[in-house]
Length: 522
Ligand SMILES: Nc1ncnc2c1ncn2[C@@H]1O[C@H](COP(=O)(O)OP(=O)(O)O)[C@@H](O)[C@H]1O
Ligand SMILES: C[C@@](O)(CCOP(=O)(O)O)CC(=O)O
Image 1 (cartoon, rainbow, N blue to C red):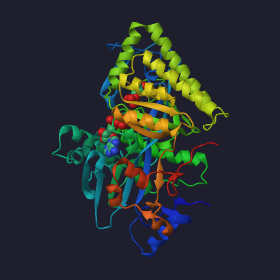
Image 2: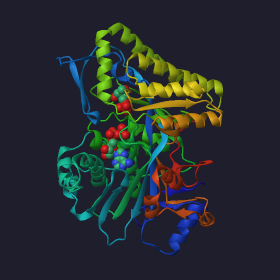
Image 3: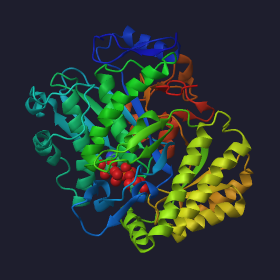
Image 4: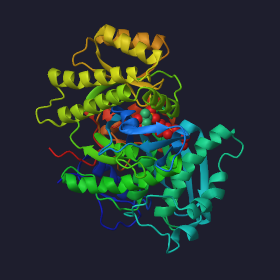
């Protein structure tokens, strides 16, 4: 039997670790010193990209109108502060899009404090946020009122305004002297944390420090907020011992149940950050792999169909650093469709066909991520989707430049991802690309001011490192591994340093220590 986090009631507020190998060795050593404190542990969750179907998923089979009519519904995208009035055309179904996890991730380190320390701290250096609250001063009365009290398995689909109000003084106490644009970012992260913490924990919860570092660019359409939301939800649920995994022998159904529990609370955190999120980003960040999502009824969240067996594919992600506005690009496509309804309708239908074909190819039993022909089919569908997005007018010269450079080197298949008009592009890399070609491309991109990430598509979702001990190629490996303490985590240099210190992937693939809920069906 493999190592696992034990669900049976523990003695000191964290799951027990039950297994052999370096982690068990480390824990035994800890027990010998009879430390009353729970060991530090880590959680991690990925960002995401939209691979096929953006814009069609918004405009497909619905027509945007400038002003509301009695037949309109109000569609809000609070994250982008945008609103659209959409009038439904009689349509049996809307169009779909596919979003997939990427290997850029957030990492959260959780340290439990000694019993006498009754404080909770957040340390989020990426956004320059540090704050400590006294546990006894949090608004427990409001959150534990019988009419409001939630359980770890509750499905919460909207925020309770009274609870939001009860948290306000504790949110407003953060960073009072910082400029408003920074305070806004801090308010989002802090509200998400406090809402989850007060909903799930209680006044007797152990004092702790939650430290987060992320390798995902913030506000670039790569799901950074969902990724931190999943980390927060997973960390607190683990501390509450409400999760039995992950462990290698776990059946996929059990693993999916566990991640659904995390996903529900990550969605609550996303609501604190975005107001009315679709739920796609947190779903992808929790379960990893990819999802097909479709908006059938605009008054409800989209339907989401997981692609549990989506393969891991090599990807070059390029950030144009060109600011984009999702609202602007969505409205632009809406206007184009109003002017040329049939033509644009046909293009949007074609995008839908591409998405459908992609799902078919990827779900085909014969698909092999190592096989050139299989990759070519997926790549071509990306190229076609990009061409259709160009014809909708949502590309940008900076995005076209990336495509041009990649095509010139013959390195892979490129498309813009997300709203376009700037933002990021993704390139599916051909197998066996000559290293010098890759180097040349990377040099050119760097020279022209692009930020680039070598990543993979369709990787793991939420992961757990319990306790926070990893083999890092040091002498300590023989002793079971190196303990990741708060200081080394905070001092890791840049995103590369974070990856090197705690990344879920080492150079030779997955790193021993990190565990994932395995959701694949084969
Ligand atoms: N590394 C991080 N540390 C702290 N908070 C973060 C981090 N990444 C994202 N966030 C939170 O998520 C918000 C970004 O959400 P959003 O603008 O939708 O970007 P994205 O599209 O990347 O999710 C930030 O304002 C912040 O509150
Ligand atoms: C254009 C659209 O289809 C994707 C927008 O993605 P992003 O804001 O770039 O992550 C809009 C949407 O689906 O809400």
